[in-house]
Image (tube, rainbow, N blue to C red; front, side):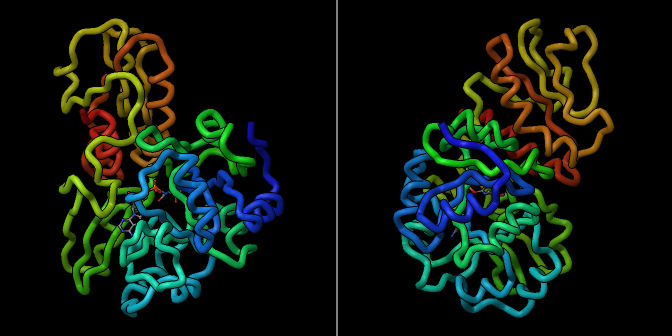
Length: 316
Ligand code: TXA
Ligand code: MG
C-alpha cells in the first residue's frame, strides 16, 4: 500500500530515484515520473495498464523549459502561454530529441503543460527534469480528483501519493495543437475554448474521429464506471426507475427518491459541476442499483467538456 502525505521533498526524492508518484494538479491527479527516464516512464505505463501507443503529457514548472522539450515554437504561441500558463491547457508541439520515444509513444510531437496547483508547481520547480504524468487511474476508468481515489485504484502499485486536496477544476486539461493561425482541438477540457479565441482564427475539433487516434483522449469509450451509464438530452426521456442513480446538473426531479439523485451544482455553476463530475461518477458506481442515468448539461462554458466525459463514459 502506498504512503500518502504532503511531503514535497519526499516526492522529489522518490522521483529523482526513478520512482513514480501520485501528484495533485488543478485538473485531476497525475501519476508522475521523470519524463527523461525511460524506465520511470515504463513504470507509469505498467501501473496504469496503459497501451504503449498512448503518449504522455510532459509537465514543466517554468516556461523557459519549453525550449528544451519543443522546437519551432511560434512567437504567438509563446505569448499565449505566458498569458494562460500555469493552467489547464496542454499544447502539442514538435518535439526535441532529448525526450525518449516511450514518453511520446514514438510521435514527432510532444504534449506539454504547466499545472497551476501550488504543490505540483513547487515540486516541478524543485526538480531538474520535467514530469511525464497521465491521469492517475487504471486505463479507461474514471480520472481521480482526490488523493484517496488514487490510493483506491493504484495504491498497491506506487510508493507515494502527494496529497494536495481536492482538484479545483476536476476535468483534464484542454489539449490543442497549434497549426499556424489555426488550431486543432484534440481534447475539450478545463480551459474553455473561448479563452483561446484571441490567439487563433479557426478551431478544428479533432475529437473522436479515428480508431487509431493521435490523442486517445479521442477514444470513444473512456472515463468509464463499471455500471451501465446512459445520457439523455431531456429529463422527460429518462426511463422510469426507482433504483438507478441520477446525475443531474442543478435540480432534483420530482417523484424520484432524492437519495438517488446527485446534483452537480445546486447553484447552476458549470465550474462547480466540472469539479464534481468524476467524483459523482465514482459515487454513483458505488451506490446500490445497477445503472446510472445522466442528464446532458447546458452547452456553454465547461458544459461541452463535461458532456464529452459523460458521453464517453456511456459509449459502448
Ligand atoms: O489535465 C491533464 O491533462 C492531466 C493532468 C495529470 O495533467 N493529464 C492527463 O493525461 O489527462 P492523460 O494521459 O490521461 O491524457 C493525455 C491525453 C491522451 O489522450 C494522449 O493521447 C494525449 O493527451 N497526448 C499526449 N501526448 C500527445 C501527443 N504528442 N500528441 C497528441 N496527443 C497527445
Ligand atoms: Mg486520462
